Image 1 (cartoon, protein in one colour):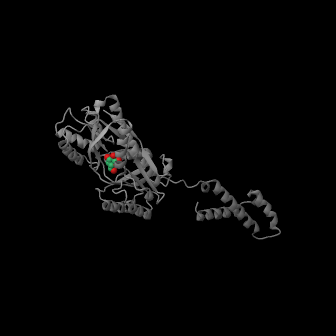
Image 2: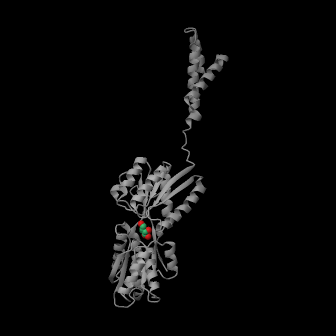
Image 3: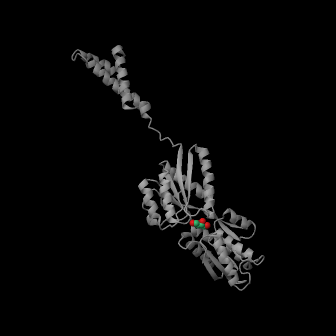
Length: 380
Ligand code: GAL
């Protein structure tokens, strides 16, 4: 109750009191009536007002005033989602899952969610401008798949100045940047885990049947490597741990060649096409840091008409297209990210931040700010 309302209630009660017998007053008020003889005049009235103020305050405390104003959830929420490249297959899978999950969230909670999607088209300046735009649209939180993970400082400055929390995803800013503000979070997948699982698929196959990988039986598995962007945490770690796992699993390896195809199917396809020409009949295994590059290798193999003599090809991500190729027997194995959970946790954290709640209540966070989505191996 507002103060003015409270005072008017007191005055109403006072006016009313002037008309009723003092016998109806509380004990304390009646006792004070005896002092009227000593201090005639308005003492009884003053005492009565005092008693009423107390009673009114007590009654307020016990009723409406006692009920702490419950934070009513907003009827709507606006989240800016900034993608490093809108045509990246894995990122698009996450985006689709996010949109699906938001629909369910809206139905369950009645909260209207607006997702403002931005495509950075691999350009950090473009993405920085998109952050300005998202802030000017009054986004409550941002989910940022940063173009250049070493350039997070600019976005963090903008977000801090506007007081808009940021959930980075898939492309991890350096730790120093992540520690600059308590309203920064990161959702990603463990690159080492995916690589160990990818290597494990190959170790299992080799242990069951050496010729599955060593097709020409020369005692070595001759492989080529397709790598993602050279400064991406996932490329570096996946390459290292796929190979290490094969070595640890006793698979004799011989590297023919390798190249960076930046996660892209067409770039991988072009590289593989030239390797098939340069090393005819020699490639037994293609290790790709992601499914799209594995699919590019499959495209080149298909174009070369190598049916029946195809090298074994493995990827990582478990994208819908990757799983189709697995089903068709063109992809030997992949490792699937739980993109549904990835998108859900990302949104839940952004929503918690938008509502001023603690993200730790909706996600199992490492070091208070990181969430690692799990992987599972898939074979045909
Ligand atoms: C990786 C994913 C790739 C690509 C890249 C983009 O985690 O495996 O396919 O999407 O992220 O940052």
